[in-house]
Image 1 (cartoon, rainbow, N blue to C red):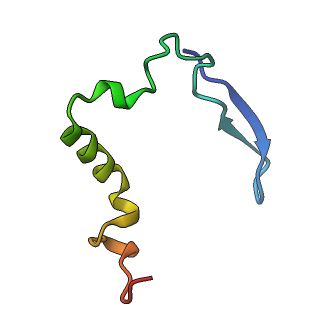
Image 2: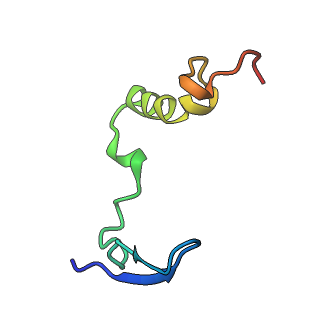
Length: 72
């Protein structure tokens, strides 16, 4: 894939090269790609998938700059 490079003006400089879009346009060919419920077999697998995906919002453990001294 050949990348598009654009020249733009930057503050304090004349012109700089900026990398353009790096994705391939199109739509998924298979309609089953986004259906995660059908990919997972048992109820336990589905619950584990959801808990892993939502632990950022509902979890008690936090790391680095995300840690709050008092819960929200």
